[in-house]
Image (cartoon, rainbow over all chains, first blue to last red; front, side):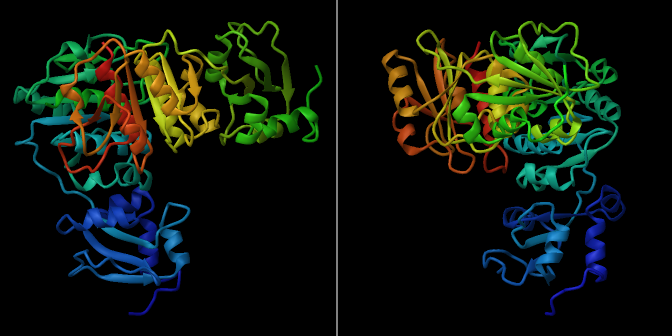
Length: 250
Length: 250
């Protein structure tokens, strides 16, 4: 197959649009790069739409790429669609997750306006590790399909349902199912160590500077804090999320 | 006082040397930037050696800067000594920590070759929060006085002793005091949830790719793993450290 060499090629233009949130939202697509992520994406059905590679990259023999178009591009084009400084020479266009019903899920983490891509990615990776059923992203949270977020998930964004929506609506639905809702707060509330793990739960974590919004904190069953024994004024939100998720799973 | 305007000024040259590990190692000094970090450093005795500020920055009235020289510099000079893209216009030269005796400490985290500054900074911040007595950095760990590490500590590097040295020597010393040593390992070992919190402990965490070295794992009392319930292959090292530290403190 012929190599794509021109930045003016319609495919290249379409890929570049996916580097912006607007372009991703309009198409429902996103780009991932590197061997590990493409491999993780290929394990899921119907996620990888197209693979882009440079000339000297070989597709590993263990990958099932039946029905996946593979396009060869120049190093310059690869660089232009990748976010890292030294791309591995392999990338792919993936389909964003569809909406999922949360009906059969019991373990949730709700994310309220987290801004840092690394934090969101790490929360998703840890949620996957902890066996959380679904991650729910409220309005104002950084885009999950941003290259930095994806990298921090280490592929976990392909492993569990990630939903977007209004958190007050989700909380109301979960409350109807008698799922305990735990907010997190630096000051008020009870120490998480005093709350026993339960079979179902929803933990809400919030913005790096301002925490979980007051509106949401007023809808919870309990608001939890993580004791600060030293002089640190707070914990990083991904760290706090992880301590709580691992406390509640058992 | 006269403003420093020339990049050739000996002070400016000396500050720039502190941007490299070599320069920091030779002088035992390092640079921090931003209001929060300088404020945290000033709370400790004899740490801040000199404050640099731009013309339009006012030293907050609540800061005790008795005996601390304050130097005004141009925006260009400030930019040249700061690592962030938009410096806040305030920085300071600080003294590195001296060696501490670990004799009276009981709760340790030992860091074996962690490479990412953000990970190390977050481990130190969380160690502070969790009431750990000292952080011990083994050879091959990223420099704690690197600007990115400092930023991730959020000031906690001023709150607790941070020692450097050979981890096998430290472990031997701690063993003589009957302090339980816990390695961490993805595969072998026992689930941390099966080990009860103790009054004293030393947790060893390791390199992002390779974990804790085999030599160290053979010196421990127990090696712990954190169960992975989902499809994630591992946890971020700062996340794993935090889950374990908060498990053991009580």
